[in-house]
Length: 450
Image (cartoon, rainbow, N blue to C red; front, side, top):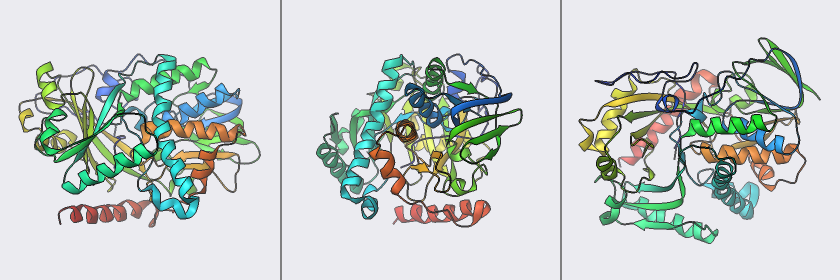
């Protein structure tokens, strides 16, 4: 399932939407940008800087890699082409959900059944990393526990029962509860679903505030953060030199943490991750009674369709409704007009509610839906993490820990497992790979109608 959101720098007011506080410069206009904590301006890189490690990308992957490395005593420079949290990390659905991939058993021929089990355990640990980081550093990001998978058909509910049993076999310590059709209004005020699986070990948060809080932590640990510092060229070798328009970084080790925004910076890696658009609308603030009717337990929820819906309440009781993953590379001209009918199919009682915000972005999709974490074979001092396929909020934090362990020379079973799994390059080159995948996803959507 794809559960995060990200890219297009758009803010369009729908119907009678009122003008809201302008977003910080260079941030995609969104509910998150309008409600974010104060963001310090980090300088643009100028001149030459030296560091043990240069991290490219100021999202969750880059920030958490930098934090983990700084805690291990490394000097770190982080380069962000826009502002901290500008991409997926500051625009997504804010759902913090267990797991790191889809269909992990498919990798047993490569990493063995025990390796698959370890990946599943790492998918649980990934959420705990976020939990600990928020608590340890007092990051105010509206972290709220409680999540429910929603069944669109009876087969989904049967699958939830299997999922719950498998989680218990792994020793999952949080409450899991299957919901039958008659119980669904305990979680969601809609008649659209035939069951669900409550998970109190997953939840939701304000993703941009989490990223900004982690940037603060990184800076306090001595990480040098540079914004508006897009990388223009990389000179590889025993020592890398990373160039920007006005400066460069010399480092022993390089980490590429750009995900869907890698573009042509490294063609080998960019060919293995496909940017896919996903979109969110945010309503006006709802009354307490109305919000409680929609989501009585204030859980994040997600259905099971290929073109899935995911939604939750914000801290000020707006409904944040997202989904509609696009593989075509073209964004809707009016996101609110496109998403609002989808919201009304779930909640027809919101027909009179104003849409205050709309935005979208790019998530990084890999062909096998497993995050790509490893190092380049021909450049062993270059590490990377990308292609979270909708599990980015937690999997990025895990990636940061695993990358730091590997760079520090610590034994990292998790890094070794991820690095062993091969990842294919999408066919068709950068111009054809999106249309080809769009056709493939259309086939899966048609199968849902059978």
